[in-house]
Image (cartoon, rainbow, N blue to C red; front, side, top):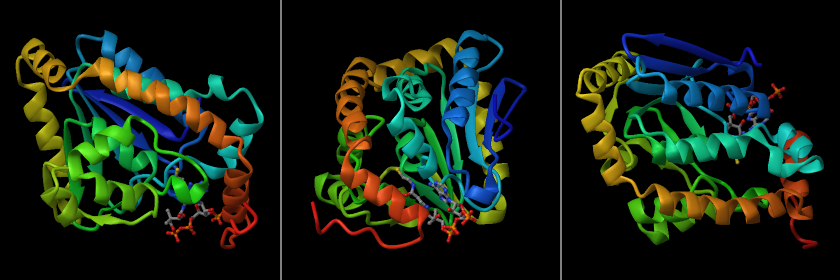
Length: 254
Ligand code: COA
């Protein structure tokens, strides 16, 4: 249980709100567990036709909680809820909608690749700084991101940590629409209501045809094996410790 994820359902739309603004909505293992529980329940509930993910405060999501990463690395990595959430993202049969304002970091960005309609506010800024944290891409982003935006730009984002603004994300097909910041919630509600009104079986069949679930799952498993190993590496430990100590990491000894 966590009080950092708000779950509500109204008129066929499940809304998952990341609500940890003091930590920029960084995701803890408990939060992944809550998100996974909610998606699992929504999958089984015919009354839910669409799921929306959004963030409270001025920012969508700062990615995985880095202190939590250190804890997960010290324990049984395979049991981490993050992997359960990632697998559910890849297999969720109903349409997923994201409303993104401000920064989306790491999984905050890669989860968007699994959303069927992404609504960005003008101030949205996407990053996926895996290598700079001693890690590797997850959530099938090692395949999905280059497929969407081309290898060179994807490598610059995931290896060097380069950022992408809302305009470019829209132009490269990572978002359905960009709206003024003040209009984000209304735009997301409109998109979700539109999807909820469609014939649900046809929507799910369309999504199933457009997304190769088996290939996504296979990519995820390949990534998880390397990610779990990287999580316990000295390079990642240095990156996480540097973040906690509010200093630049030093990779010169590796
Ligand atoms: N894990 C843990 N704590 C985090 C966090 C994360 N991923 N992101 C932000 N926080 C915490 C900060 O440590 C800070 O805590 P404090 O107030 O106790 O010092 C608080 O949230 C506010 O963050 P701050 O860095 O001051 O906000 P900012 O607006 O200047 O910068 C970010 C926002 C997202 C750019 C910056 O926090 C950041 O780079 N976070 C790390 C992102 C990351 O690497 N995620 C992992 C991806 S795999």
